[in-house]
Image (cartoon, helix red, strand yellow):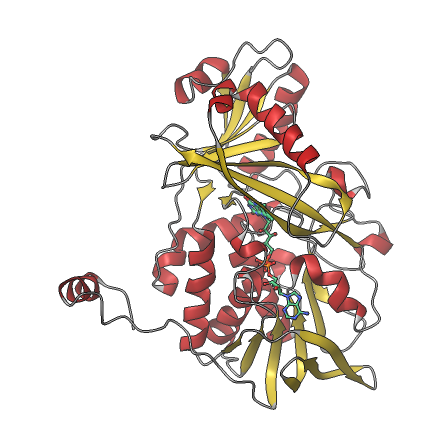
Amino acid sequence: MTFSAFALLKNAISGQTGWRPHWRKAEPKPHYDVIVIGGGGHGLATAYYLAKHYGVSNVAVLEKGWIGSGNAGRNTTIIRSNYLLSGNIPFYELSMKLWEGLEQDFNFNAMVSQRGVLNLYHSDAQRDAYVRRGNAMRLHGVDAELLSRDEVRRMAPYLDFDNARFPIQGGLLQRRGGTARHDAVVWGYARGADARGVDIIENCEVLGLRIEGGQVAGVETTRGVIGAKKVGMAVAGNASRVAAMAGLTLPIESYVLQAFVTEGIKPLVDGVITFGAGHFYISQSDKGGLVFGGDLDPFPSYAQRGSLATFTDVAECGMAMMPMLGRLKILRSWGGIMDMSMDGSPIIDRTPVDGLFLNAGWCYGGFKATPASGLTFAHLLATGDLHPAAMAYRLDRFASGTVIDEKGVGATPNLH
Ligand SMILES: Cc1cc2nc3c(=O)[nH]c(=O)nc-3n(C[C@H](O)[C@H](O)[C@H](O)COP(=O)(O)OP(=O)(O)OC[C@H]3O[C@@H](n4cnc5c(N)ncnc54)[C@H](O)[C@@H]3O)c2cc1C
C-alpha cells in the first residue's frame, strides 16, 4: 500500500476503510542472517537500510514492548546538524540530508519541518564560541547564521531580552534544522522495512546472548531462542544491560531525561529556541502545545519518569528566557532513559565478540541521528566495515584517547 493523492481521495470517499496495517505481526523464525535488538528509530532504520541499500532482508527486529515505546516515542523531536567537531559534523549533516528526502524515500508523512533552530547567546564569550561553531559548520558546507540581538528580537519578540542576569545578545541560527514527528518516523521505517521482508517482532525481549567460541550464535528471548551469526544492539538506554549479556562493560551510564508539554495555545514559537545560560529548549507542536525540556536528572536511573527537582530547574530556565510561560498549564510530562557516553558522542562499532555490533551512546541527541545511525549501522552489519561518515564513533576511542567531546566536560555524563 502506498500513499498518493489518489489513495487519499479514494479512502476519503470510502469512509477510510481501505487502509491496511503498515507492518505484519511477524512470528519469530528459527534463524535470521541479522538480528537487530531494539525496535526504536535506530533499530528500525537499520533494518530498513539493510534491506533497501544492502539487499539483506532476512532480518528480524526484536522489540521488548511495542515499537517506538522507548526514546523514539519520548523525545522532543528536534533535528539539527549544528555541531563543532569534525568527528560529528559530517555524520549529523548526512542525517540532515537524509531527513530532507526521508518522506519521499519511505513514502510516509514524517512531518519533517525545517522551521529553524536558534541557539541564544548571552555574553561576549558565548558569542565568540558560537562564531567559531558557525564557522566550523560552514567549512563543512552546513548552513549557519549569526544573528544580532535585533534580528533575534524580530524573530521572537516574546523573549526576555533585558533579563537582569541573562540579557540576550544574539543567536546562532540553523535554518535547515527543525522538528519531525517522532512516532511517524518509527512507523515509516517499520513500514518500509516490513515491505522489504524484514520481520518486526514486538513483545519479544532479549534475555540472553548465545556466544559459541567467541562468535555470536543467536539470542535467547521471551519467545524462544533465535539464531543469527550477526546481532546488532540498538537499545539506547538499555545498552549496558544488553551488552552485559555478552560480558561487556560499556563506557555508558543511563540517566533520565524529561520532556514537558503545555496546554495548546495559538501559534507563537515557530522554530526551536534554546536558552544559552542554562539548559532549556522549546518548540511548539502542530496541536499548539509548547514542548520543552532541559537537563537530565543528575543521578543514573532506569526509570522512565523523572524527578520534580529537575522540572523546577527546567521551569526556572524557561521563565528566565520566556516569562510568559508562567501563565501556562503543563498538561503532560514523561521521561526516557538516555545512554550517556563518557564524551557525549555515540558509538557505532564492532565489539570484542565476533558478529556482535554496537549502536549506542546517543545521549539526549539521538533522534536527529536516526537516519544516519540506521544507514551507517546497516553498512557495518552488512560489510563489517565502519561507514566513512561514522569513522570517529569507534568503541576503542576511550582507550586510545581520541574522544569526541563537543562540550569539553570530560567523563561526566550528566554535564554532556
Ligand atoms: C525527553 C527526551 C527528549 C529528547 N529530545 C531529543 C531531541 O529533541 N532531539 C534528538 O535528537 N534526540 C532527543 N532525544 C534522544 C533520542 O530520543 C534518543 O537518543 C534516540 O531516540 C535513541 O535511539 P532509539 O530511537 O533507537 O532508542 P529507543 O526508542 O529507546 O529504542 C530502543 C528500544 O530497545 C528496546 N529494548 C531495550 N532492551 C531490550 C531488550 N532486552 N530486548 C528487546 N528490546 C529491548 C526498548 O524497548 C526500545 O524500544 C530525547 C530523548 C528524551 C527521552
